[in-house]
Length: 114
Image (cartoon, rainbow, N blue to C red; front, side, top):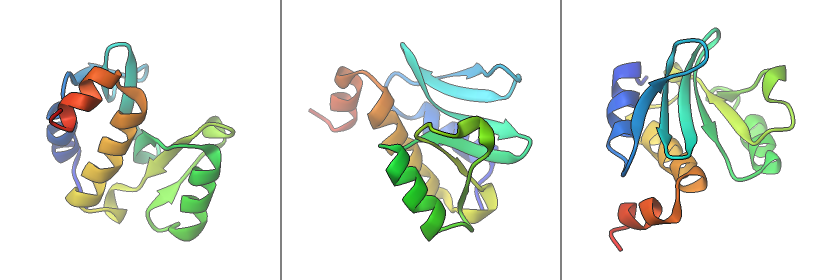
């Protein structure tokens, strides 16, 4: 199980990332100009972007103990991650992938050490 504080540490460690309150006041993580993850309180979860709606559906089907969604995210390539369903390494991988999908290319290159 991962905690919100651990998620914060991972997200803020990505190049150019910063924390900002989301619409509901919960923490979200962004690079200019877009967000790549946020914490959702009800139901409690980490929200990340995935490559496509098809990828989202495949993950939901394959690992329902880790991933879920709500009607708010229908038709969007966004996945809710159960905090008690993933460990730190898995959460870091999901956040990094979401970052890669949403961050400017220069920050992704910085992440890759190029």
